[in-house]
Amino acid sequence: MGADPGLFTPASVTWQLHGDPMMWVAGVRALYLQALHPRAVRGVMENSDFRRDAWGRLMRTANFVGTTTYGTTESAERAGARIRKIHSMLTATDPDTGQRYGVDEPELLLWVHCAEIDSYLHVVRRSGFPLTDAQADRYLAEHRTSARLVGLDPATVPGDQEELAAYFEKVRPQLGAGADARAVDDFLLRPPTHPLLIPAREVLWRRVAQLAYAALPPYAHELYGRPAPRAAVVTRRLRATGTLLRCVPARLRWQLPPKHILRAMARLGPDARPAPYKAGR
Image (cartoon, rainbow, N blue to C red; front, side, top):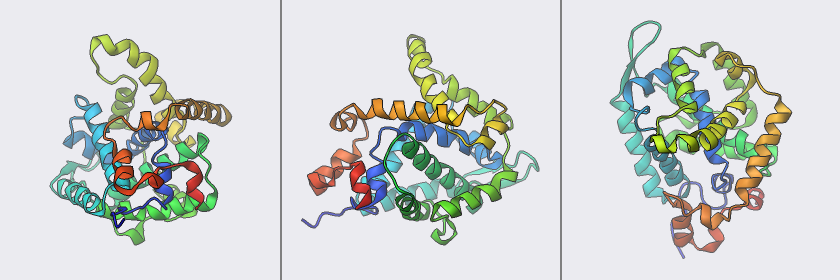
């Protein structure tokens, strides 16, 4: 009684959708999409060690999403403040002009946010998670909250599917697959790993990366220079993967770090358990 439900609460679409196992595929799709903005990806290249700490970077991102979704209000606000502080200290060099710029420029933060949220919504929904258009719009509106946490003015952030589509149409002329984007592409297909794990990388990880890449919008395939797979084939693959992953008991899946869902259920009670059918409440 009286426990803090956090910024999104168990009544949100976000609470239900972010508990789906296809979020991992969606996260890789977001990386592919984000890399197509030359200034955004340059900021990553100059300020992170993602080639040697890929798994750490993925886990930090997952931890941030889990904290802001399922954590207390205090922990979510603290995570946002930490991200804003880090970004405020980082700069990068424009690949075209050579000028220095801050990685916390609103246009860059907005691109990263929209590419991420679009990927979560697109992949999870396309893989079979039941969500109406109204619920999808509600999800996007809810994420004006996560946009605020990273330093954006919520009023400038797309709050429904129509606004998000208009944003991507507007930003497309700025996108391109330069050397940085191709480095990310190559890395995602062949991330460095221990020699003994290379077979697992080829069998498991590459399939995840290829599926995430296949789920990109057609213009992204065009920019990367590889033919876009047929949409119906991609949808079948996403649905088959989603069905398989959802067969793994949720309690078992949620035991994986960082265990935000289990902690939220311990704090709020069993009714806080995420489930697709609750998204329409």
